[in-house]
Length: 112
Image (cartoon, rainbow, N blue to C red):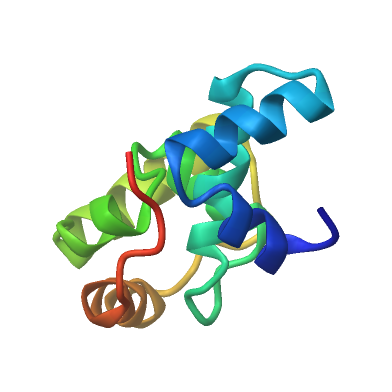
């Protein structure tokens, strides 16, 4: 696997994640975490740091992000970052609103 796109494509199914786990010598849960992060990267503005902040705030999938209230998520991300210091600057409320809107419009890429 070379890159985020190939990880997402290969790891989109439980069978694919199992194969990756075997080949990489890691747990299926670890592979799922990587795949979910790769899935979040499809959203413009979300990279490694913001995906980690989202996960710490309780959002680890695009599907979960699509179901969130942007204002509540924004507050949760601020509180989480104040406690854990994961990013230098938390995203703006407008960015979080845009992420939720993008998540709602993206086709599902991962099956569970």
